[in-house]
Image (cartoon, rainbow, N blue to C red):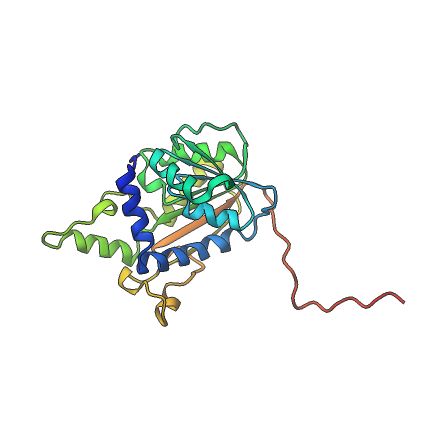
Length: 249
């Protein structure tokens, strides 16, 4: 698994702060919001493995989870601590050997992490060991226009694909097989976004429609939520269409 230094963290954050990066992250967060909407949040402990500088951890905190982050890079952990301060419990550690007890967390999320590890199955086994209620895995889809754009860039004279050229891009079939091998058949839900190539990642119509949330795994950024209980935990939603009850007479 690659270990990022301070200069890598700065480059990482600069992309997220670009117009294209902000748009991509906004759509990715919509996917995550949809998937965790069925999970309870108050007093629920959520671990993000490979938390990086805490961009998604911050979102989970705003959604109401008690958050913990784990990353191999001390520089990434420092950036997450700067972003989140006392709101997060942070650890430097290896995703293949997590420094946590069995069932220590209610939920575990892995966001574009499995592409970078040596043994994805071992990481998922560790996630299943420390999670009691559910696991969410987000990944970069190999069957996407984003992947095609990276392949094309590799062929341009004087250009390179950068970090993404060497990662192990994944797909829904591979992720679901890995999850099945680790925990068996469980209730799951999938969503994706960013259907178009990066040149279309813009906050204007029709690009917002093209790159919005999809009920499948066809987008560049895809995710699967796996519930470890037979009956998935649900957060009650307000029924805005319901009429108020009449007072008793």
